[in-house]
Image (cartoon, rainbow, N blue to C red; front, side, top):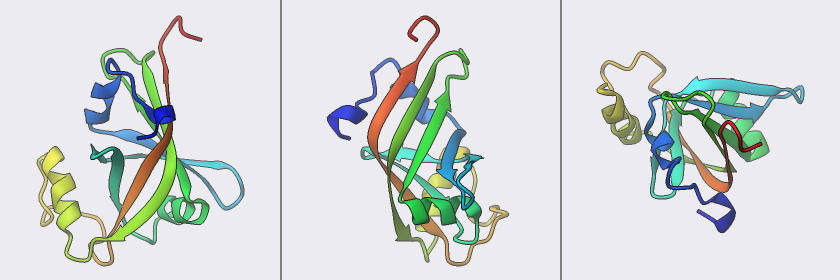
Length: 135
């Protein structure tokens, strides 16, 4: 992560929560936001997506996206991570299987489209934290 994207140690645990909000800009210019599964590892945040999904289309078109994490123990503590998007193929579903391990799920039990899966990778360029009393 870049210096601007350093996540304070007391917020880093939010990268381990189960679900984050993924935000992109839709084709009409309005935000498009989805709750998604993800993995934060090796300084990036990854998720498995199917290229037919609007969030994938937006992320690839703009090349930018934001993850937003809410602390489950205190909804007034949040972490926003903005970044640049790159994509890798996951034809063998190895990343989907790896991501599923976090959630105790297998590829066989995955109910979404399995053909032509992609790994959408956000490389952080900025991280912002917020908690009551810091605004």
